[in-house]
Length: 204
Ligand code: HEM
Image (tube, rainbow, N blue to C red):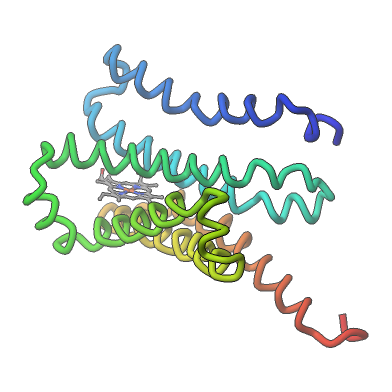
């Protein structure tokens, strides 16, 4: 697909990824988030974190199955958008739920399992974002860098657990199921690829 090689692809995708945040800021500033704007904002930012995570994990399967190598250059930017939305989500929680009372936050994290799991996912994303630049790749060495960045699979598992636990109180699992199937398929595809690579030639 020629469009994927166009130099405008990256800036266009960058702007598209910023749209949800821009819309949410506009809606918050103009009182368009419904009866409970704080809750709506926290939840919408959580949803966009999860969507960005699905997108970044879909890059490699799409690249391989579709034969679109140009997609690889979007991966780092999309990964940083996962961190961006997770950080806004976390910030909204610390502000609107906790009033930036850090001692309250420290009490809340171990008290509510879904917050603990979300925090672990965010800390992992922080480590990945901090080492996403070329200098970090050189400093760590390719093998160690790759091993660390496989942490994104743990983020996917923790994110589903976080969402599942949050919805467990409401017994409402429909959306959790959709994301679990999406992320589960993207992870299963990688396991399958690794299995195929390890099988002796002639048995593929
Ligand atoms: C990778 C990291 C994370 C992902 C993917 C994520 C995703 C989500 C999702 C999808 C929801 C539900 C939204 C909905 O109901 O439509 C949610 C809710 C929530 N998350 Fe996260 N989250 C993450 C990290 C965190 C962190 C670090 C915190 C706070 C320390 C946090 C606090 C919350 C809170 C307070 C809610 C709303 C609970 C409620 O309204 O009852 N999340 N998150």
